[in-house]
Image 1 (tube, one colour):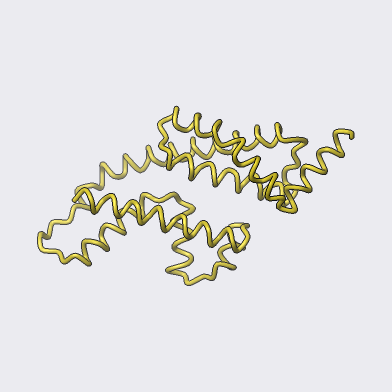
Image 2 (tube, rainbow, N blue to C red; image 1 turned 90 degrees about the vertical axis):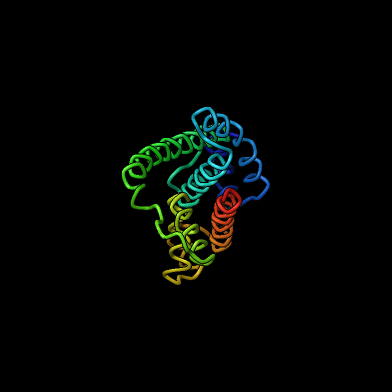
Amino acid sequence: MSQPEESSVFVEAIQRDDLHLLKRLYVHNFQQVNYYIVKNSGTEDDVKDIYQEAFLAVWRNVQLARFSPVDEKEFSAYLFRVAKNKWIDELRKKKTRQVVLVNDSIDEIPFHQETDETDLYIDTVKSKYKHLGERCRELLKRFYFNKQSLKEIAAAFGWTEASAKNNKYRCLKQLRELVMNEESSI
């Protein structure tokens, strides 16, 4: 089989959402991205977020014919570049956020001593919401505040409705864990 035919078969398999191929690509490329992010100040949670975002972006680019990899090696190289760039962007955001938090931290300290549990919980949720990735914040805002359907959210992000549902669940779980960790340290 010639290389153009191999490429078109590979691309077509991705475009028709061949679950076996997609799973293999997802699992096969995870360790390289994991190693890079952890070695560059990242956590396991950072790896999961960045990797999922990068994989979805590459998958979406193949779906929309913006990228047509010749083979798995080219797919892997592109996926790694996308993940690396997303991690560098995230590090820049974190650095910027740290500067902002240092300057604004006094304004964010609650000075009233008597707060009921509901107010404290709401304050914790608001505080931890800021620590979610930009994509999670946008997704949750669209769903809960703008009252958009999962179908509308999926269209806005270029996902399937099932992906939107899964990402909403993952973002909520992440927020819940942040809130629970905060509550257990109080």
